[in-house]
Image (spheres, rainbow, N blue to C red):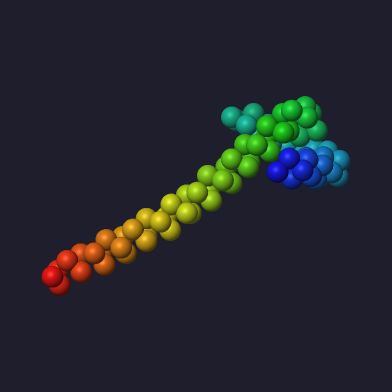
Length: 82
């Protein structure tokens, strides 16, 4: 996983060199990516990765809730037939 982060940092550094004026807005304040320290850029990547994981887990939760509802309906039908 560490190599992925390093590759992502390198890609982000490459992007920044291509477009020096890229900005990120955090809590209403805009920052030039090129002005951020390496540690700040790493933390930004971590936040983005965490956000993506939250989105993935929310999708998985929605799938699981749908399955639970289907199981509950099947159980209700089974019990009604007994």
